Image 1: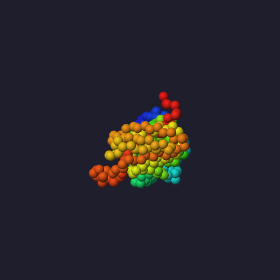
Image 2: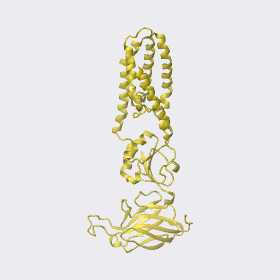
Image 3: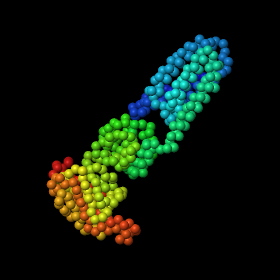
Image 4: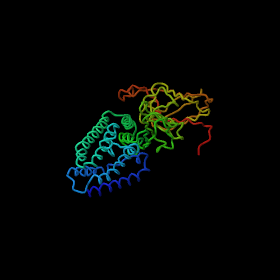
Length: 392
């Protein structure tokens, strides 16, 4: 008894201090019961209850037990009413309490059993100890274990947070994942998504469902977003997945508002035809012409900046680039480099076309069986208003 009286309060005090210290570090820390720091000492209470099975000596009458039981009943009532609504038991911090409180019906029944045991203890310590040790404790452990098992068994089928994490892990490079923010409503499931992304630099953002994602709330405002649930994306975000349960998006910096990376999925601002599939660096043209159609009119005085490379026999040949009725020649080397073209589009043109001088397949050059008719490799494209003031 003396050991329990010294051990448990000291551990609870340390845990309370820890909880208070980390409460400002995250939205969830102040709502957690960090029982894992002292729950190993709780079996001492069972030993204390079992000691009541031994016949008690003289001088321990029901009045003394009543004086002890009344404050205990008040504490139990306050905890039953306020503890679970105020805190969130989970299978990591407090698995036994999580299992007992997971089902409201079982939780209320266990509270009733506990109150009955305390009331019986006032009248007969031995009978109360028998009720607590032989009935309450086994039933509580069975209910808690069953609920924890049911919860963990759900992990056999991946949920949306697991699917989102696995998709981001496969889609993003490690450098891109280092600039990823995962957004969702459940902080514990957000940790699970980050585990499957497998990158410690991933940031987490807990938001209520439907709340807008503001750039100021993002750890990486120019990085990537993995959104689990239904949330409006910030302005300028480019979707890279079309799944119902989650969305992977690229948040573009303001300086890149008119920059298109061909290695990334197209968004609503520009659509293309005549391009092959995306590769790590960009995309090849496939066929005799590439057509880029923009949602908004091109600048009247257009400066088109392209990072391109020519394929095979197209090296040194003129690629005819047209915009707004004007056609200019573009020459590219075998190694990619930046080229600039200036157009007067009239202010209402929405299309840029690139005619390939000599579409050629790798198979024709003796490089395997690839039959795609390639011509120009497109890395990036920047659409600039040449009449706008230069940014400092």
